[in-house]
Length: 367
Image (cartoon, rainbow, N blue to C red):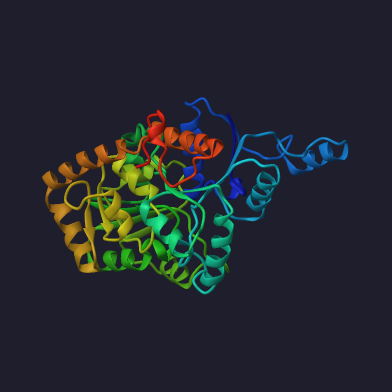
């Protein structure tokens, strides 16, 4: 089986959760019998593909099934090619109206148009993959007419190995001491920026947000305001060259996100054995258990209480951390690879309902 696993604008998404998710897909599939193709263009580039077309060759690489991870013009072109040539089409719903809102300036305003486009785009698929049952419900509410199957983004535990050795250098670099409350990833209001800042102002802990942020015309007012004038005990680090340093430097991973489709950084924090404090939102209730592998909070007061508890109770931190590592292991890349292989196999065989296809003989987990 030859699968086109395509991510348009890959060079611009390498610092994003989508880019990480796709990299993990490809690493997971490398251990299966799926032959992976990452560019639809013969020769790897549109100009080389055009040269092939001029001499009568097909500009597209041959593949059995197309799997697109974004929703832009490149993905639309691949989708149309797959439909025109009778090849199965899998579309991965990393983007929804709900998680697009609150990311960039004007992203909430254009929400209705985004939803209308996504409804049409995803509905053309033979199968839509998404990170959670929560996201499946969102897509069904649009409604997307194609079958929808949840598949965990997983976590690449190997990419985090040795993170402990980065603790001292990264804490020294960013002048962090004591119990450090931290977040990792792009700085967006959707990810709970305002709450994170308010918690820093209300406490004496060192806070750090490891990740890039935009202060240009595309940035939201909340991001520009918060990064320009943060609380004295809050550091916005910008891009860090090794994510292991971010997870090593912090002690309590605080993620007061408003909307997530899964939250890959949560799994990474858990894989590193960090105590995790999360918003009490549907997707986190789906994957995590309050008091077992995390603390779920519904208000700023609850977040502060949770952070104080964890700072004062090392036994609670240790118990949550150990259980969190177990949760992360349930989202291993071998399970992701099995689930993706099953999805490709099922669309090729015409089994395109939303079930995992686990009854057909392969060991599959869709988390």
